[in-house]
Image (cartoon, rainbow, N blue to C red; front, top):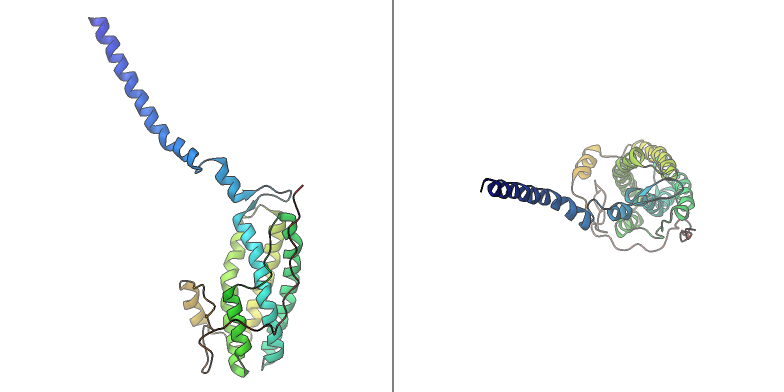
Amino acid sequence: MRTTRYVTGTSLVVGALGVTVVALLYPVMSAVNGGVLGASSVSAQTTATQYGPLTDLDRSFVVKVRLAGLWEFPAGQMAQQKGTTQAVKTAGQHLIDGHTNLDTTARKIAPLLGITLPNEPTPQQQGFLATFSADTGATFDQDFANILRLQHGKVFSVISQVRATTQNTLVRQLADQANTTVLDHMTVLEETGLVNFNQIAIDTTASPTNTAAQVAPTPSPGSPTVIVTPSPTFSLPPAASSPETSQ
């Protein structure tokens, strides 16, 4: 009887421990099966390249550099043609020069990293260009300075995040170049004397809107309130080639 009770008690303890272990392991196994801790989730976000790991943030950054050139390059050309002050024309030339160099780098490294680049601006960026196309005189100067300064301020923080975290040498080099270029562009835009810093601070903290109808942070009287798709009166950087097939 005593032996039977001992065996029965031991069995109950072992059974209880087994249930506890299963309960503890279940979330871990579920996470693995669901991809939370599995290698599949990591590989979906990061790709191994000969230049170092390539993350989703890295890919997005290279694409954003290309997109920036697709609208800021023609914006700079319009500033050269329509700007009413030398400071605005100078800022336009800086945009042309800076994004010519950045775009060349982005198109060079994208095939090496298997990244497909766009060949036209986003709807929102097309809206900015349409604003500039419709503007004349001092209205153009103000819209040009404020829209571009606001957008450069937003991308500046993205560049710092990429530079601080990327392990890819090509992306790191592009981030270094972009950091220097964007800081230069912010500076020359501010030197126009037209930037409304108070409004930019409000717009930077506001929720972003994905619309082509966005206008300048400080619209001048007579500025258009609705943006339509711009006519192709401006040139774009060269088309991007498709990524090379990895060997």
